[in-house]
Image (tube, rainbow, N blue to C red; front, side, top):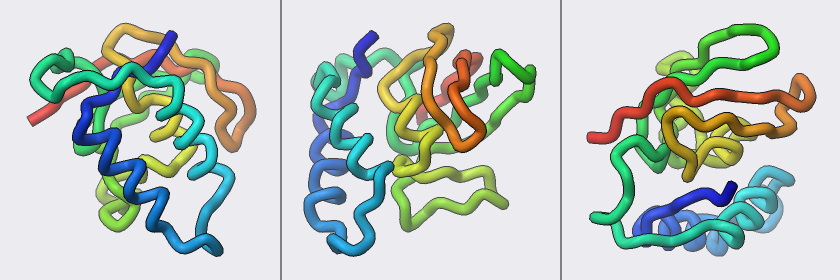
Length: 124
């Protein structure tokens, strides 16, 4: 499974990582760059509306616990967990960007290896 990323998101994220202060570059930023390298990059108009991208609202379930996750994927400066906005640099954000409703993704999150199933994606 390869993530699908719009040209706009791809260039935004590459620029963000390239211009990020080196002392703030984390393991997650490195993982995001690796995911971008694997991604199919498509024209913005060609992406399916049910693919998670920057500013997407999504609902997903942790297959192991049944816990429902409801977040909007944002750029780091806009992330605020109290407002259910997570950064694209977060482990969950990296795991899910570029994947669509109905897909299950395995990723190592802080609690260990998890299988996350995407239940809903809303893009405005």
